[in-house]
Image 1: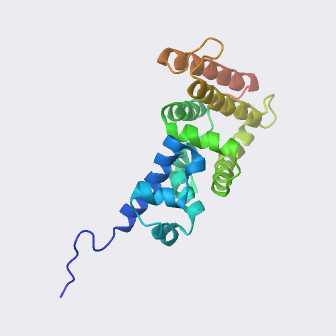
Image 2: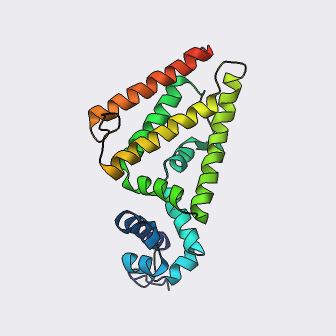
Length: 215
């Protein structure tokens, strides 16, 4: 006879994992990364802490699973992945403008992502370090392809992109943390965001123009 399954008798593994992952995000946003602890996660999720060890191995494993779901660059990697290998278009001005704009928009809207960036520069954490290393792996795939395009030109593309990304992070985090303007621009408004990104697009355009890369 086929066993009858009643709600509550057999846990849905993925649903339970989802509750634990969601709890990490709630704690991070409301109370900060220092309060992400096993007992706190148990309380917020309503799930036994034993299942953290069962499904994720330990707290770092749970945090890593959480980060993989909400980090912008991990999500971009998933979009680009086909048959386990990232498939990239040409690293054109339009491609990079869209990628940077998407990063800008996501970080501006996501309180969780803002907290993750701040966490990453405030405290040593194994899961955060792993995430950073994995971001770099994706970055290498993109930048290696860009290196081929910009080789022999007047542009050092890697530090140029690093400056763009750093500017996006700092501009948004500064506005969100201090509720203040930067150079008189309020990036919490649509007008302010548009001004910032239009300037970034112009600088990106000059990067391609100055290199004489016709793509």
